[in-house]
Image 1 (cartoon, rainbow, N blue to C red):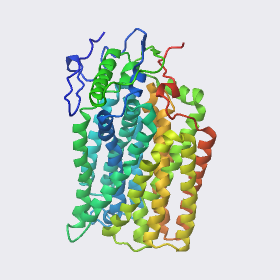
Image 2: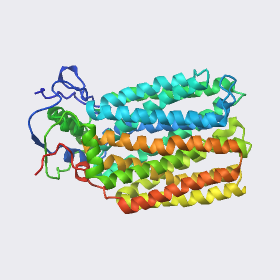
Image 3: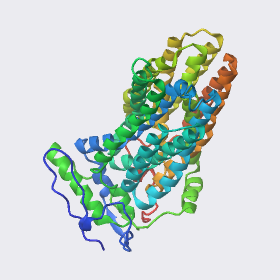
Image 4: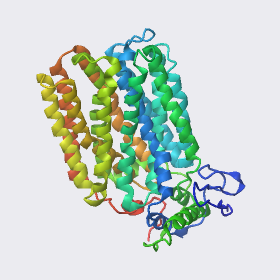
Length: 510
């Protein structure tokens, strides 16, 4: 049995460092990974009863920046679409711009599946370091692209890094945040995608201004923004421990207990005496890993309704978002005559509206409840999108009015999309959480995201407003289908521990 991990003394102010004996790092498998003995623990209840503290802010900032990076990438390509299309080295058509966006999303699918599988096997910490490194190298390489195929390849690899981040980071956040704040936090963190989107829009205003820099060089330098941001992420993540819940199910109970004690000591210094532990301890039969066959059986035999719900929520929001957002710059340039260097002015309010949705509505997902709020946000977004699509086809909207309409629509759609990630993370047992997130993210993105940009790129290239309206109406119909599915199959997870919502596979029968 591995000796109990030593806890580094935490300074009164600053970060806590978690260091196991022997110099190894929690989350890296070894011969001690699986303990043979059954044990009883109250570790989940100890984490859930903690008051909000600087530790939780550290988790949110260091891990939540994933969505900032994704938003930055998506917006850069959207804002830079005109400049990239007109690049003398690349010279892309509208259809090729849509296809390169699909390459990014296809990479995200593959990355989510591969890295999600690894995350459940080797732990959260090691993977959320590896995936940000993949992203860092690939996004810098994107700025060095020399033709359409190299650009598409580097976008694929960038997406692979981001897709892997979704599985590893969503798992870690949900397992470290107290149950009563899980919905609010998860929505806010997912919503920071739009903080990255705003950064991308602002950066494009400078980097595409011909009076400041040559646009051919500007769009290439823009991809370095994400690379620079990811370097700071690596530094912050050194202070995030492995998930004690993951360690618990893998028999590394002494490491898990050491980490939780460190967290408790840090929080107690900041907040004073901690609340008592409430809840019945659970008994764990440790395991080294969960097979793909068991993952499939659990999803489709034990939780078939949750599996159906996850597929619908993820696929519908992915189509709606990616179809509209990846091609919005093309709509502005083709139908409203907006120059490429001014696209960022229209993307910026659109991004800020999306950011405010989860931040302002997230609290209600923990108080009013998941089912009512998810149904309502999907339905409102769908109805408003249908009306806007018709108004666009009739030519009733100016560029700014079109932007205002999308801002209102995606205020609600952003909260809905964030809740989809929350739902798939809460739906299944801890041992397969990362793989579950990866599977539903991959399927939703593959069905809704990869097809959407390519379809809308083709519709825009045709130059007919009515054709594009039908694409918008399709997205609206899918959002309404998702709303109905949530109302029928949604389940209550607000305020409940993850182990109560979905019993761990390693938990012994009582």
